[in-house]
Image (cartoon, rainbow, N blue to C red; front, side, top):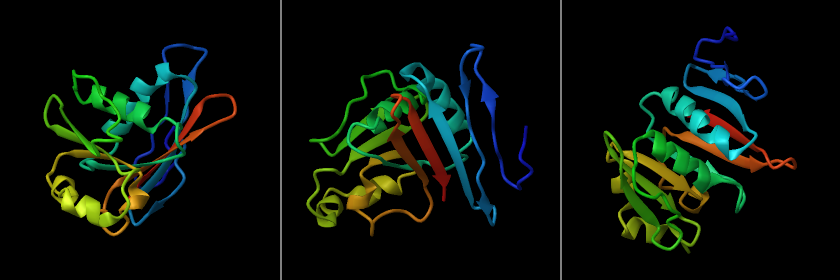
Amino acid sequence: MPCGCRAFCFYWLSTNNTDYYELLCNFVINNQQLSVILTASSLADLPELATQLLAHTGNNKIFLFQGDMGAGKTTFIKSLCEQLGVKEAVTSPTFAIVNEYQGANAKIYHFDFYRLKNQTEALDMGAEEYFYSGNYCFIEWPDKIPDMLPLHYVAVKVKALPDNSREISVDII
């Protein structure tokens, strides 16, 4: 059921009658920002959540992932990459800083800036060239490079809940 706002909101039920996926439209400002909350009760939910997220983020290809260590950022990125047609194993680029994957229609860059000491390290590796390449960029620990982030992006916050489910908050900015 649509909420009546001037942007998109989406709700869906899984084919399994015991599970449901929850997306809540919070607000839209000048048709520029959309906030939704997705709930994943298990890893099995992630492919469908990834498919729905990609279907509703338009031309946005920069995704910033925030969350505590072990919250599930890389795991969700793996599902996004699978939905984009990546056939190879998707792993955390913790030590490499960036991993490159070939999707069905485009390259995908997966960054993990956790180990950076300062933004200069990201500049030296040419991170901005990746961000403005027109390809998907999935960026973990974006708070390490605050002055380098593009103006428009999809902010994804992953939070582990006490029941071991995940709350995934999405803001399209």
